[in-house]
Image 1 (cartoon, helix red, strand yellow):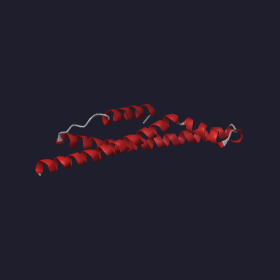
Image 2 (cartoon, rainbow, N blue to C red):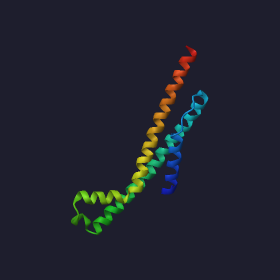
Image 3 (cartoon, rainbow, N blue to C red):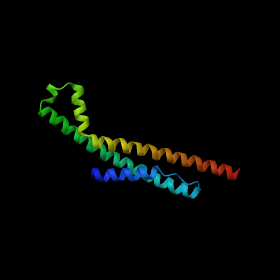
Image 4 (tube, rainbow, N blue to C red):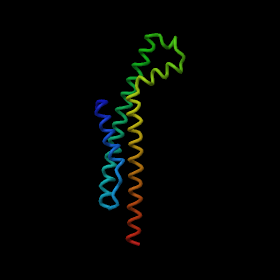
Length: 123
């Protein structure tokens, strides 16, 4: 997946996660299934983003070494130079990590709500 495709996918996932869940049990179950798929897809997208992040960081380290920046810049400045080289991928890594976490929490919340509804109506 390209950076643009991953960015679009992240935006779509965030939009879905920001929608309020319906209180109808059947709708909650449907949402749980969608969240399960989203968790898997977010994990895959996170892996792709990390792989690209690592490639950019490797390239930045190589470039810094070739330009002898490691000899002329303090280590802290050099680290910032390297991190900023991968800023777009850093954003995607953080975004997919947060999407994954939010989807898991929503899934858990829906399961709790369904359990509560079952005890309320069956009790």
